[in-house]
Length: 285
Image (tube, rainbow, N blue to C red; front, side, top):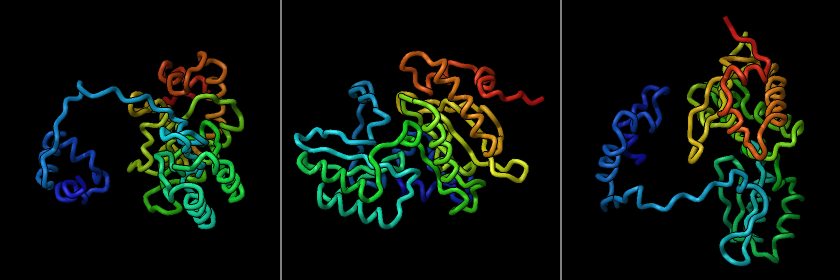
């Protein structure tokens, strides 16, 4: 598939240099036909209606301590906010995986880590070693589901310091509210959307506002069974003004949400005009 994209995708236009644009232009069937030509075996076709329904995804399942399907084995989801892991902690994770697991470390789409195959009798000592390394296997409902692209600290296209802003916003929300359902915050620095802001419960895309770092704000995106594109709440706002705005929005959510209602469902059942009222956003003329 990578070879097909490399040979047929438009890599001269950075705004179109994505596999999704090739599939959009060709369609899935043509893309699969070209992929099959690169293989030494035919693809197996199987009707979607004959497949088993996918098991519902636990959006917080990548964090904390969980038993595996294999008897007596556990995995630990380690919190690595927006993927920042200093060398010393990286080496500590590697040592813990070798000593108490089977040497494997797995990545998650939320930029956190999973150490699998830890025997029950080694579980407590592994947890102690993680804490001693300054790592945690717990995180708030927002921080655990926060992702951010490289941002302007490592990418010349980004308009904002995405990683610092993402962590600050997530910590503010987790510290201010008792949020029981997972919330996915996607923070991307430009329209290339490496952090896929359009499928986040809250999506932020970096923009410049009066010379300051700011964001376009979108709400209600999702994937898998929750799939849908987010709706624009605010076209541009300074980051310095974003935190109090998000505080007002989550205050409305925690006070007005139905029992066990997720933030995603809360935003989807309200019109954008209503959400703006919660945020106290004035409509532009």
